[in-house]
Image 1 (spheres, one colour):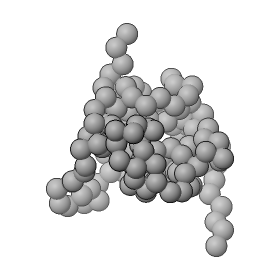
Image 2 (tube, one colour):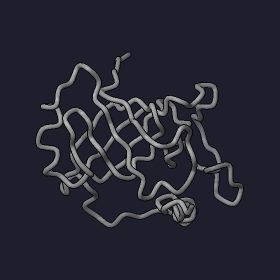
Image 3 (cartoon, one colour):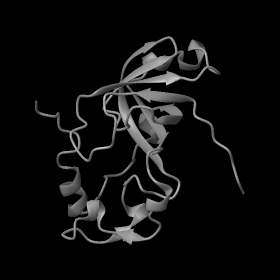
Length: 157
């Protein structure tokens, strides 16, 4: 099976390349492509958050990982399968982040804390509904807590 997916918009952000940490507080804009009018975002302002699905377009396909590796190549953390981590070098290079909606301006959606770089193709935008969030307590290993410790901090000048 081969499916074709087209970008519905592109990120206009402040970061030209991917970085591991300090994504907190940053705003980015998702500008819809010409095939969509403002009505595609109509009603979204009533939600506090959206889930953004996007393509890690800057990842070299030769660097895609299909097996296990140490997250961030840190040997202190266990080698785990690519599907047990959220790294960008994944088989389909798809990223997903829940972002706070800042405002909707016509065909532009301004969000906070989208960890995607400038020019990133956006594949889909979905409103976050409580009913789709985990219904039980979330569990994760210690290495993941260590990895994420500075991820959402605000960059110090």
